[in-house]
Length: 519
Image (cartoon, rainbow, N blue to C red; front, side, top):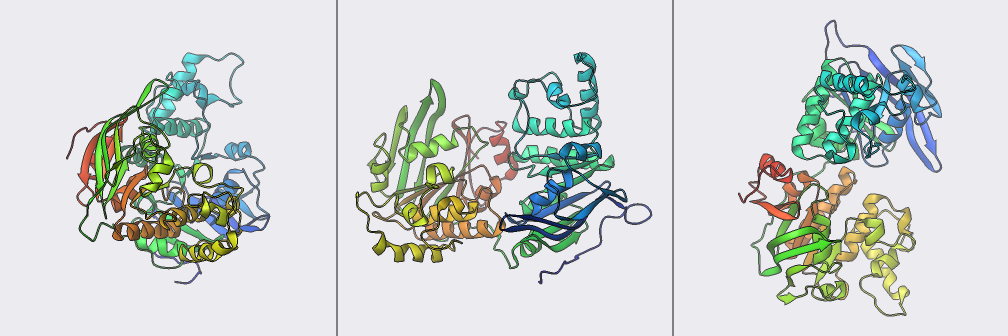
């Protein structure tokens, strides 16, 4: 496979042949200091289709999307809307031409109602709002695209999926004909993803154009009419036609090589019990966060904790790591009680911890890679960096960290490379042999190549006999790696299933609080 644009199949057909482009970008170039983000990129989207932008972090897809909606202006190249050259100095100008972006991080006012958020910023409102009429108009727009929602509901009371629906309705209410959806499934449970896809199909049937930006290959295959793949700012492939390409083909276009995508399970018999959790409870500020949580993990076993954000996963990991003292219950590592003894004691028993917040809790951004690698192993006031530098260089090479040597500042690392530094530090042991690895959202925000590396490292640690607790909101990740899956809902374990035979529908239902019980 070369870097040349690769056409796998013909595009979607409409009556009378291929539909003309509703919006197209021609030879787009965009530079930032030291970075060529878009290098003569061509892209177009037709009425009634889903055209996906796919690429690794830093590939240029978000930059291109920002240009398409008027958030950025290209250094060279131009846009065409329905055959007419287009200049978009601002996102409002984009909206005036029927182009809107629904951002991954919602831009809603939580204490406002749905209708108030939808009309916020609209220039065609009377001085005095007629709430009843506005509610009716918002409800009518939502219903017409299969997006029913209560216009009088307060946004702060809505689920994540419902808030996303409000963002989409807002764009449609303001006249959008072309919607750019930025990582729209990143925070949704499976049932919400399915509903989103139904909404997308309803919009395309009505003639809307959808630019879908995602890194989840399975979803891209399922939803896309066409896919444009970017790598290092250049187009490396165009894949056209529903079902014309699979995830493996798209991954190859993204990174230029084959990617291992098969589920990975324990290949050796599990050993002795390493982690024992019994009746663990936690209350913070008088509010119950964890309630009667019990489970165990053995040598060579990976247990996955699945759940929607805010159901106690992060607090569970922090409690096991010794950062938080539980209200009740017990924690034992390798047969030794460590409840409430603090993180140093837990590490002395063989715990390693990769927290969710890489550059906050995990690493010190102002320090070098070398110093960050030493954080959990050196407790002396005087540190001999010279003698430790060769080991740091070895870890940089072993974990494929892209950096200018051990003195490279952590703050200048990409998300994937920061995660590799964390894993290098925690998996390399240091003063004690790692027996238990607690790792949270290990591949969140990473591209497919970095995801492959991180998953391989975790699998290698499992094969070496470590017990691993994998905490992740990415259900695909949990389903692909865990030997056992536990679902945490409102601080309780409500579902348990073997990873190899896990039902996506059952796990997703448990995450949403619909299914409770042990399979």
